[in-house]
Image 1 (cartoon, rainbow, N blue to C red):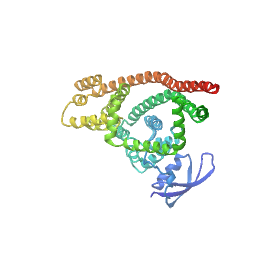
Image 2: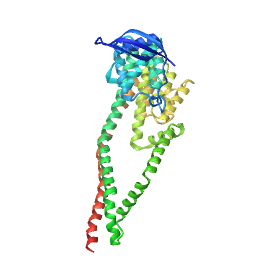
Image 3: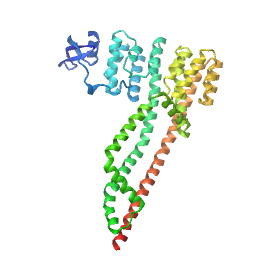
Image 4: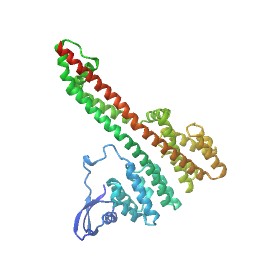
Length: 409
């Protein structure tokens, strides 16, 4: 366990502060205090740090930074590095940046401690408990080796920002249908829990069977009231089981294959991973990384397990002297336009320029497809929800009017 240090310091207003922190060395502890904007006047090692309480541990293991925080972190760091600020000072500034999120600031503090101890930025990223994806670590390592770290970080930040914008656009488009769905659920609960139980005694007294829809809702309400706890437990267990199954390679491959076969979703997945492959590969090759390790790194940036397997197979075939275009075309998953541009790049010796063009084309196509999809999704879901809930309400209202006939008998 890392040692614990007790310290006394003065903050930016001149007020005295004191406390304790955990750091690998005394120098690393001083760097953390400085990153907080405080000036240490005394720091003493206080023994090993106490064990982390169970309620503060990562119950599901290490987790990557959320995409918005990852994009904001990369953008802040890219801006500072391109301004030729030393990496340790850049990390100090990022650790105090309130706009990147509390967890990203905490991770920046750990990166700073690693850099102060003598690690490179890529080594510190790799040791950050899974906070950063492997392809990002490889890209940063490439930037360090080529002396173009600022440019690599800038391109990576742009890529992450575009991915975050696409995800945000889909979420915004689904917000209104989600509100409608929640309102429909509340309406259904009122009908099943309040209205239907009030109607059933009237049919029982008249000796007349209720309409099918009323009988169905009454039975559903009775079962839900009796078995809701068991149903909730089954639903939670099923969700956990599905989440665990989705991590298995065979299941993940099957799910990705099913997504690729869907009419609209499959095209979105192909364009997304084609753009990611081309953008990452262009960044790596432009900074002097050989094509085989560049392909292996680019595979880690892809979301589909099938695309990752295709690219890794291409890397293995490329080591045997075969053409990149031929290898990528073997799976039949990459678009024809992308293959033609890559072939032109291989023949002309301008592969990185053609890869950038492939990335731009498919990023714009993906953005246009997402915009069309989200513009159509809201009205379609609204109509579907309206038809389902409206049909249910009309059926129940019709049953209510039939009660008047029973009362007159």
